[in-house]
Length: 150
Image (cartoon, rainbow, N blue to C red; front, side, top):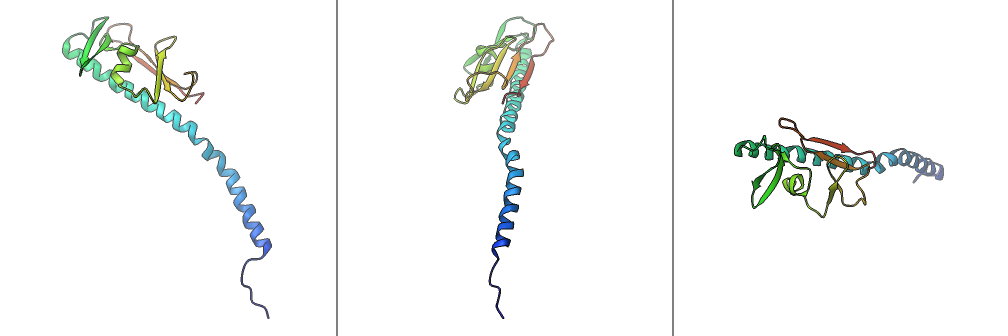
């Protein structure tokens, strides 16, 4: 009588096939995580913009310029330009209020306001956060996330 000391070739092939099937079904889920990570980062930038604009508005109320069409609020050694108390949609407004790293993020004027996007992308198309400052007293800025092309 012979003793069985290991697996047969058929058993090893079946295990390899099963592992291959599992990898084939799980791979697309893990490959799509990069897009989800970019989209989540953009949502984080949107939250930072909302917080920064609220803080600047609070400082504008304290200094009494919340109803002024164009003004400025001192933040540290810089002055953030404001429109009706909120940061303006430009580099001297929302970008200065955010104090973002220029190595990770790029920004520029958009058709409606100011866009911020990952600097790893050449253009903001399809993967950006857009900031539109208020046009009248009492209005709030409009901040939108576009993640279709991330």
